[in-house]
Image 1 (spheres, protein in one colour):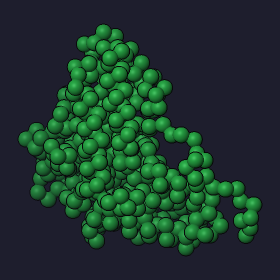
Image 2 (cartoon, protein in one colour):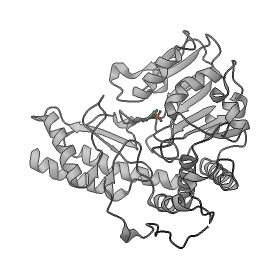
Image 3 (cartoon, helix red, strand yellow):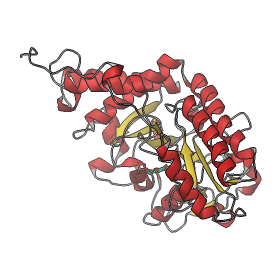
Image 4 (cartoon, helix red, strand yellow):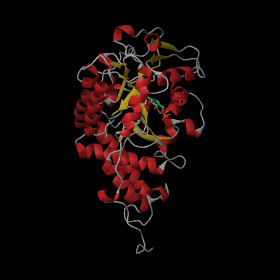
Length: 388
Ligand SMILES: Cc1ncc(COP(=O)(O)O)c(C=O)c1O
């Protein structure tokens, strides 16, 4: 193996072009130390002379990458021993069929808290397995502006599991307490809580034992697209019906997430992100920062009637901040477009709201810098001064 002719890896800050403030809802911004490490390891990891994306998924290098990723994940989430940490594929959307396939008996009952677009999709898919499921909360009627209080969630038949989404990426609502900590819906005794935490996993302290199963696509807070993190209690591993290998959680649990070739590079990146969270001080630090960051933008929104935030105050997401120019302002929809365009020209990218909500959305995941929140708040003031 010769390394003599190897071009320099772009490891010095000066060698790299400037980066925009990336407000993307996902794939989202990654921590800079993670990007820098990945740049080097793509060339050669652990002195092997082979890049991470070229490593055999059965080799000793990936054995270590995987073991480290799992260990760091367990440490970040303080995950109890009776939970498995699995790295799957197919995105969070695949969990829409994998969860009922494994957990819901034929014509069994599961209850759904429909709080946004993603939970609407989850609800629609479960019909493949059972016609006896129901929505214990339907937020469509209130345009998904908030996450329900306990007395608004109505259970009928006792569900095997209750499905929720902790943070609604598109509408910008989150199950939260006033201090931003996790608020969980009440769940009938003996029912398992299943949570899609795709857009707020590890953004604040979490008690894993409150859930039977949590999942997320990695590409927002814990890595890049290509792997889906599933944290599942061991007693749920065995499926309720006969299933093919790739649909069974226990296949992944028995085979260390590699019943087939796993997404080596995405798992590696997640491992780096978990380690970055630990290096930064863990979830309490992430939470404090996320509160500060979101407050800068929400304060700017609340400072003037020029803006119309989407989420009700008590459900405001710390991750995805959704707003428009107040429809009462003349030409509001045109001003939304102008805002997105001019923000881009000022180094703030990906602020356009999702097609189902319109307006703007500022996604400020763990790795998003506070300077970007300040820049956006200032830009909002300047924009209003010119256009208000
Ligand atoms: C809350 C939530 N659930 C599910 C999904 C779908 O994820 P994937 O594209 O990984 O299937 C997303 C994607 O943005 C999301 O934000």
